[in-house]
Length: 299
Image 1 (tube, rainbow, N blue to C red):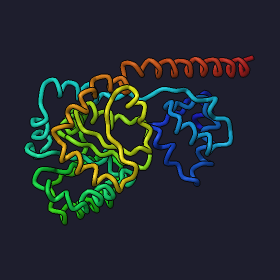
Image 2 (image 1 turned 90 degrees about the horizontal axis):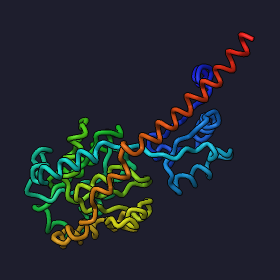
Image 3 (image 1 turned 60 degrees about the vertical axis):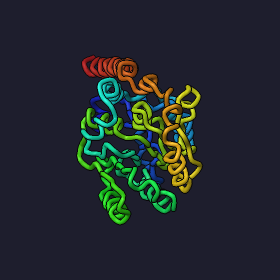
């Protein structure tokens, strides 16, 4: 940081996803506060919950440094192309999933905050799920997050359950990620915290019935006419899955409005303009500062 301040006194700080802010520990607050203090701009998603957390945890008026923008994602283009050129059966075969079964995807990384184990406990302990044992397969995208214990615990649970499942641990490129989302039929997203993540919107675009927690900030998607279902707590997910499995033929009419407009929330062609504007302003400011310092030295 000292090196950066000496050679680049005008600093833009970017969060790689607002989850890093929401999951900040008490011990990390002073360290982060020092970093925010020297930043000229702090890029952050324009989300009310994120802003409130920031204002709660930090005494200084860092909000005046906020520059609201978003990260784009190339996944939406891949999903759009796959939907246009293929079908879910083909995507399942490509990803090594059972093309004859309903694929239920739980979470999108290996962190414990995704709460895959609690989700499984609620579903597998529901006495009615046995009726659908031969009809479903569970999928667990665990390609990042780095929690090997969580992965191993999930494996143990699934092996004991005798339900068909597949865990994706190795890196997946954009084309593979898009196929995995299209191969899935039901996506369960009950993380402890989250913001407008591209994963959930990707599964929605890929014609999944998405079930998420009503504590997560996705109401704006409902207001825009998109559809997903919710639970009030993680214990309810077992009953909710049973409901949708028993009414599986009704899903399509509910998710029919989950169309390409979902791409607008993650289109790099749109968001890149804001990032270019930000970095151009930072570069210009740095040029001014360096010029002033040179003038002082040379007289």
